[in-house]
Image (cartoon, rainbow, N blue to C red; front, side):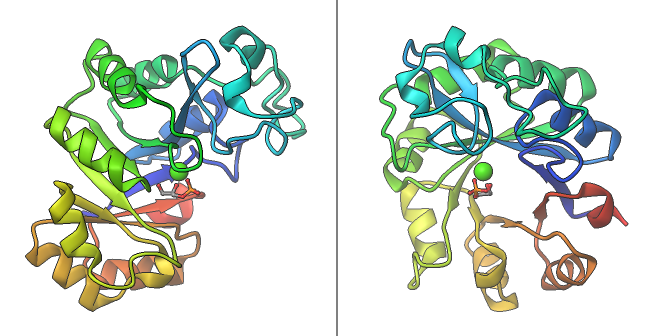
Length: 236
Ligand code: G3P
Ligand code: CA
């Protein structure tokens, strides 16, 4: 079966990267959820996609310039009715939900724009503390971070890349960094890429497929997993 991963939670049904979105992913029947993790000014692991607060919260400026308490005081509903009171979750709380619901988690380290020294160590400690090592996949766009992670843990690490990156040899690059998964964007995914990745021993999970036509195409290519904003559609 192809894994269905709720991208930033079920983010069409609820504000992205909030507990509401992750709870919805559980009831939507996702196999796991994907989230983005950064560090607060005082070094706590917080789940939010952008390096800035402005798009998804009522705060302003960089995540890294705010303490955990300051971040927790923000409204993360994104102005969506019915979600007042949603906050930026700590990674630990999301891992606990996944553990109790027996779902998997893809922890994406958001360390391409802001380096966040020590992020890898803190993420691994939180996963260990939550007893989630068997259920977690790590990923990042940062090749340096992929290399650091693969040297530090046996947890699967996926190399993410975007439309405008890695035009030559993404599979070879992933293997050279020690990754055992490749997370390509939908529009760079071909049957040939999936075959090459599998031949190199890489698990292939593709982001992001939100309609049945794309999900069916990717399943036909033989991918191992899809990230989707609407798990119910992908499941159907
Ligand atoms: O991990 C897949 C996908 O989430 C990567 O892109 O920008 O949605 O974090 P982004
Ligand atoms: Ca992400």
